[in-house]
Image 1 (cartoon, helix red, strand yellow):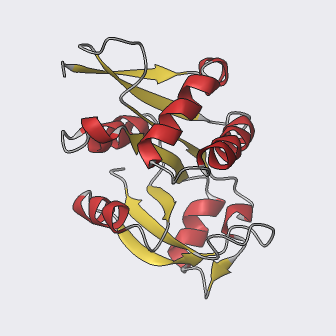
Image 2 (image 1 turned 180 degrees about the vertical axis):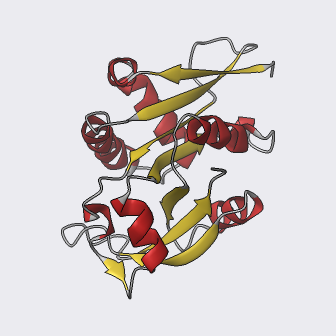
Length: 188
């Protein structure tokens, strides 16, 4: 494994590289046999929607020593719409501060963060997040994580994120029913 380089992708580059990014997704999440295709297709559907969002941003990590051009990891996200629609399905009462940040356009959602298994524990995930969040003028970053994903929970805690609630993102998709909402205040 060589030196890792980070690069920003435009929405058009991300859309053009979608098959490569879907391959990264499948490999990074190591789905059980038979689930890869279904989850790959769901990822492609989400990516197609997300690249259309205003302010979409993506950062990829490339291993200079790799034999192929496939990225070692990737993170992307977008600013939340001021109308607060992202919070539909929030369990309980949304904190006033979060409502205020959202209404002022100061919340950035990290939609995906993934690193290939053989590149983990090298600080790539944290550096992807820092580069992604540094380009936006948000004051609060938020993300969703499966409550059963102890690895994601530990990483988010180590990076200074705090869990502050749960969200049921879709009444149409029965799994998972609720995701943990994590937040991190950003330097102003």
